[in-house]
Length: 361
Ligand code: FES
Image (cartoon, rainbow, N blue to C red; front, top):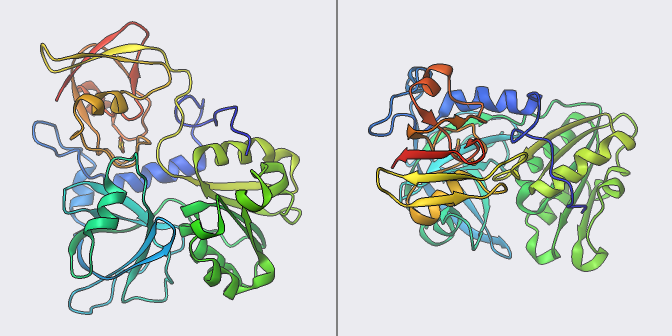
């Protein structure tokens, strides 16, 4: 995959795209942390407060690929769960208090369990390791109801491109496409066959429409080559790491496809960043934020307990209050009133070159 040019996105994109508009609306429904102690609660939060969370129990935990576990979550009393559509995610509150979003990858027709799959990320924030190591059968969890920021629109011709664990939202979409008689293809890319979950399940939908493409066997994928599988006029749905999305975005215009729907995991690369300084509390340590790193990542080196979830500026989990200095807001979550009150989302927002931002932590 071509990794050289960062993707256009919220870190510098001049205008919103449909995905982030939907995602922001979705974040409005379930922003988790704008009510943290000492911080003003979001006015949008009142709407979310009317939607009670679910309390579910882990009923199955099994390894489905190298470093990937699948969990089934169900109502402890066997009740039906709220319905969902392909592309939906849930937010789990882990036993440590960390909050993480995961795509539902089961069958929406199964109303008695939600299935998620999680890859262990060794140098991540600890959420995936906690899912692997602590979410045993019988553990109870608070779960925010499914929300969908990556809806499947059921176009006549569709190419699904999955990068590794990015297959999770695409698997239910492929199932829906098969049932609806859509002309679909799915390419699942990854390091090795052993690292890719749900291969047999995908092939059981229609083996002629599924291609497993591993780096070990075929070398690194090229986005133009992947997009060449699209039927003319197709919609492309892609979910995978940021470099994969960037490469697909760049190659789309020269491909037979006509539209792109995507979901990113984790943070996008910083675009048009400038170096500035963070101070953590009055008299606290001063930390240099380089042009290509987020304020959150730098702050977490000194204060690893600082919470986060989406790292994309839509969930609100990382919100902090600015005690002094002028932030450069790059999120799509905070209202003008919240910004005026000094709130900032440091996973995406920054400051001008040479500025020092003091944060209340
Ligand atoms: S807004 Fe989600 S982690 Fe910052």
